[in-house]
Amino acid sequence: MHTFRSALAVAVVGIALSSLQARADIELKVSDGTTTVSANDLLTPGTVTYMGAIGKFTFTANIGAGFPGIGAPTYPILDLTSVDLTTRTTGGTLTVSLTETGFAPTTVAMELLSRIVGNYNNSNATMDTYFDATDNPFGTGTLLSSGLFDNQAGVATLPPMAGPYSLTEIITVDAGANSLTSLDAIIDAPEPTALSLFGAGFVGLAFFGWRRWLRAARRIPAATA
Image (cartoon, rainbow, N blue to C red):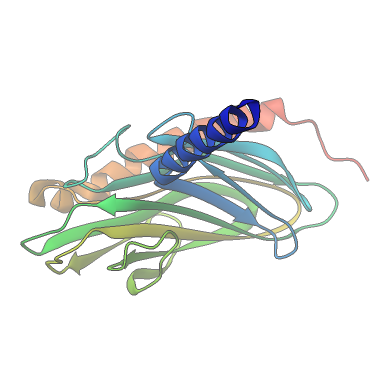
């Protein structure tokens, strides 16, 4: 009887964990080509965070946000905000990927805006964005925008789809020695009036990014050999 109860308890825990894992619809993945780390929104639905050392980089992503934190299944927003990277005496390349699954089927075409803004000291970054009609995490079925760089945006049309879909943004950072990178990247479906005004919004984003860069620079000690 004791063995049966133990087995039942294990089964219940397994079912509970499976349910939690199914809920993890926002995922963050960071890789330097050798080491890859990942995080999800299991404990904080709608947001994912990570900080730590990855190869030659010290990495902080304060928020990777989506539904239910912001947006909705019918109103996609995938926001990677407050990403800060530093290197010491040597640099390298870091890839930061953010994905969300389970966006609702669409009956009409929808315009999606991809944009990136940041501040770079001995570094640069580019952004590619995708939607995937099979709803796979980190799915790259259809390219939305490619090679976006600082203060650049791209608009693409999402066709009507019968099933749920995923969105993914991939940011590639190339950094030299003693670099400091601070950036924000987003995919969203703004109203038509917002589309016409997004350039003005970039001025504000750049200003806030510049202020955050200054704060980060003050917190980080000078690199030593």
